[in-house]
Image (cartoon, rainbow, N blue to C red; front, side, top):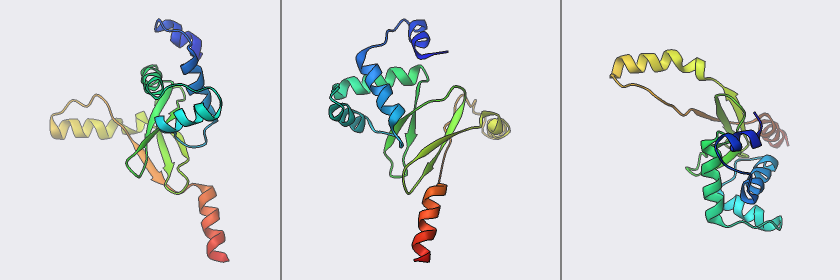
Length: 145
């Protein structure tokens, strides 16, 4: 389903702030904070207010068009979401984030936790951190110098 259809189904229209935020996130190599998105909009000559950025991100998250990624530093940023259920793997050196699928992989774990705790698990967030291949190569090059 395309963006316009998702917005129409939700009774929403494509506004300029939504277009600007989505285009900035589509071009971003790393997750961006709302403040960074705002700054990028100014630099691109398409300034939108910071409050509009926050509101737009909230709507886009509800429509599953963007996802929140938590940084190792405790801050978070946003990325364009692929269809389906995904998690993120974040490089702790360059902050690049990639998606990987995995809801089915957690089914047994969630069932065991429900049985052990008595909780009904109705959601989860899984994010992994590591070192991307590019940063690994850079580190190896530095060591070999």
